[in-house]
Length: 105
Image 1: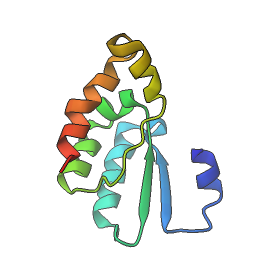
Image 2: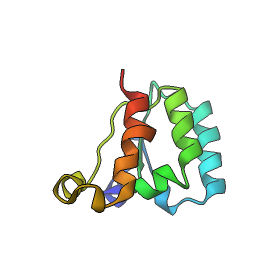
Image 3: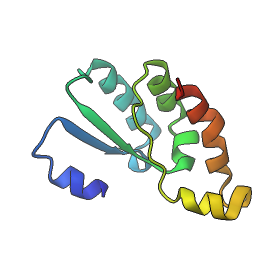
């Protein structure tokens, strides 16, 4: 899905990033770029695995939460967590405390 959005960026108001493919240095640059962007005129879509979000991109996640820049979260394959429970991936469980509890109104 990411590649389709990225390759067809005729609508420059939508900007996708695949966080799993970025280094920590690139994530830091992205955070700086997001601070400067007019985010009311743009939609930024971040694709990433739970592991990346909780480990490599944790500073970016903190920034997004602090500046209330998260408007929608879609978790792919969450049905596997509900089927297998806590034994599936520990990261899905940690999404509750690190992400969802911090962005809920």
